[in-house]
Image (cartoon, rainbow, N blue to C red):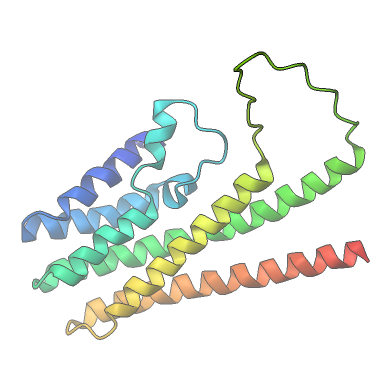
Length: 213
């Protein structure tokens, strides 16, 4: 049965807490955490919703995002003398890195699309109507800004990639071969995604400059 975003958020939260228990529970929870992150939607990975959060279910989908999962796995890698625990955590770190790379690629593509749409809309949009007078003590509603939201998603994805590289790099000299291999794969995926993001940003900036000229 396919779990919804809210149920996956709850699963990430519970598994991150279980990763602090005894060795056997810690290993199983750490490994399951990576699999749940693989199945999670992009907002569960980045922690940023694609639209304004309105219901408790939407809020639950954002809990224990990718960065929190990396933090939980880092504690297992650092604090466990049991190689099976470290191997499970390292394998999950690799899974999280793979999922984070996918989410960051989509976030960058979405930002480019949203910025292009906003630029096109601004050319044809009519002049805004005058706002009605505010009542005493009334708060002015903050309009949702798709460009700002898309940029926040990219920023969150990049911070997650940074955390993955930093965590994986710390354990590249682990005494267990599989831990080193999984951490190397995690660092490699995250770094490659970072490079793709930087390249896309440069290309978008160059395209904007060309349009301005």
